[in-house]
Structures are given as structure tokens and as C-alpha cells.
Amino acid sequence: MTSVGLLVVGSGPAGVHAAAAYLRAGGAGSVLLVSADRDAPYQRPPLSKGVLAGDDPVEGTAILDDEDDLDAWRRVEVELGTRVEAVDVVRRSVLCDDGRRLPYDRLVLATGSAPVPLPGADADAPVHLLRSLEQARAVVGALDGAGTVVVVGSGFIGCEAAAALAGRGLRTVLVTPEHAPQAARLGDWAGGRIATWLIAAGVELRTGVEVESVARTGVVHLGDGEEVPADLVLAAVGVQQDQPLLRTIDVEVDEGRVVVDAGMRSTDEHVWAVGDVAAAHHPVAGRTLTVEHWGDAIAMGRTAGANAAAASLDTPDAATEWSDPPGFWSEIGGHTLKYSAWGDGFDRASVVEHDAGSFTVWYADEDGELVGVLTHGCDDDYERGGDLLARRATLAESLETGG
View 1: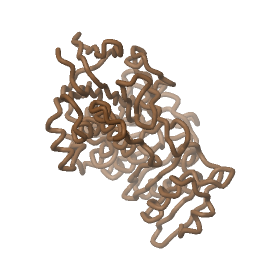
View 2: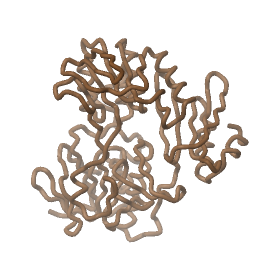
View 3: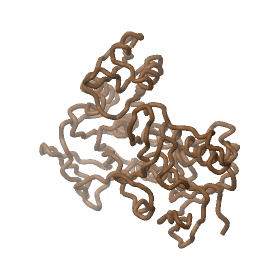
View 4: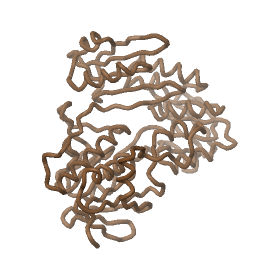
């Protein structure tokens, strides 16, 4: 079989944008995208919001909408329902689950991450995950006739899903070991504000408590002794990186992620990695970052695709870097949060409340350097915050510039 110019493994935003960017940059040869997912590439953010709320189709929403990207995408060969099980960087080929070997000139790994199963749940318990369109369909199907839903985990997925489910008229109970949703990441003040939004949406909160077990009948046993009978349990307790594929590839891997430079290139010059599966050097942060955000996956994919194209054309001067501060948006019960941060935590949080319930939270380290910004209804501060993070500004500068 003839080698493809670019082989992309994974059909999430990073993989799709890598394929499109490669062709937009004039990369040599053909492009093949292989994915274990059986659905055509779709957006994941709506799964925990519009899809669960019943506002968006369970068929999925296409990832690309830019005409130039779409034009490039039409030239990509897509093979769904095929899992890549091994990579041979010497022979430059991958082994698929059906026994085929696919040769490549350049390879982009965009295999994402997997949701963490809920510990303590009976094998037959009505516990669902929400990481794929297939899983979203299963959740929506299980809602028919349901009365009570328990959501475990108060990350953004858990909070978004709980608000969406409560909006359908279901009794929705959110269980979290945090004393307030998102408090560990965003601080007590922001956690308190999110809690008020969830309560206003009709969500019942059980904070500061763990789930001990889930019976096959759906009864959720909490660490404080409470028992919550549920028709459906949605586990949103994070993601994990433990992919057997990465144990087959001869590149540097750290804690289940492929180590790459700011151009998304691995320690093998023919292999790039993007999105959740990448541990990428960030030139502004000056260190390796791991991020699991939709927008950053797109940026990484575009970077890798453009750089792979430059490598195919032997034009290294055209290489680009992933250099914007990481960030994402979240919608909880009709309230939009925008967050950008380096991901190291914070030592100080300065809250600025604006009109009509909008606010900005500026985060700083112990030396007073800005390390993050959270906004609600204040897009100017969010945009300014990204610029300030990029130039390693101080908290004092952030407050002086209008925040």
C-alpha cells in the first residue's frame, strides 16, 4: 500500500483541524484520518449542554464551519470504526484492529482521553459516561421515563450536565467532594456563584461528600450515610490517559501523554501529537502544559497540521508554535463563564463585580504574577486577560487596566 502524506489518528477537534490545516498549507500527498469512533466528526461541548437539555440534535454538530477548512476537509479520506493498536516509527506504519498496516510519511496522534469510570458502582448499575456522541445518545435514551438523576462530579461537564438535566424537569442531584462546585480550580467566591446558578436551575447540591457505591437498583450511597434513589447516574469525575497504543510507540511519553515541542512535534521527526494526548512545551509558560480544552485542541491541531505540511515541503521557516494561553468557555444554567489560565493553581484571587451580575476574577501567584482570569458577562476583561497572561503581567497591572 502506498504511504499517505499525512495519517491522522483520531477524529476530535485536534485531529480534524490538523488534517484540514495540512491541506490548506499545501502539504504533500494525500491525507487519511482514521478513528475508532463510528460517528462522523462532531462537536463535544454541546453534549453536556444542548444535547442533554433537548435543544441540540443527538445526531451531532459538525466540527468545521469555515469554508476554507470545509474545502480542505472534502479532500480528506475518513475511515471510521477502525482502531489503531500499534505504531511502528521505524517502518512508519500503524497496525489496525482488523490486521491491516497503514504506511505513512507523517503521523498526527489525536487520540484524546477516556472518561474515568465511577468507583464503587455495581457492574449492572445505571451509570453512564458522557464523552462521546454514542454515550450521549445512551443518556438521552435512558431519560425516557426517568424521574431522578444523580450527577457525580462538579467539574464543568458535571455542572453543565446537571443544569441541563434539571432544565428538562428532572429531579437532579449533584454530588461532589468539593465544598462548592469548582472551588478547587476557581476559588471559593466563584464556586459559591456557580452554586447559586445551579440551585436556581433546580439542581440539588450534595457538597463535601463522596459516593461510596451505586447499587444495581440505582440507589446511590453517599459517604455521609444518605441514600439517593436514582433512575440514572451520570459520572463526570474526570478523564484519564492510559492508552495501550502509546505503549507501542518509540517516542517520549510522560504520564500517558506524548511529549512534544511547541510545534507539536514528538521526539520522532515524523510524528506529531495534539489535544488531550499531548504534553506540549509552551514558549510563554516556559514549561510543558497538558490541557483538555476544545479551543486549545483546535489550536494544537492547526499548529501540527501546518508544521507537518512545512516538513513535507521542506520549508522549516513556515513552522508555527502553539503559544496562546490555554482557556475555555462554559455555560451553566444559561450563565456563560470564560476562563484562561496556566493551570498551576493560584495563591490570590481578586474579585471585581460589575453591573447586572457580571464579574471578573483575577488570579495571581505568591509573587503577584497573573496566572489566570475568569469572567462572566465581561468579554473585554477576558480578551485583555489573555493578553496580560501572554506577557506575564502582574495582578496590579490587571486591576489597573480596568478589571
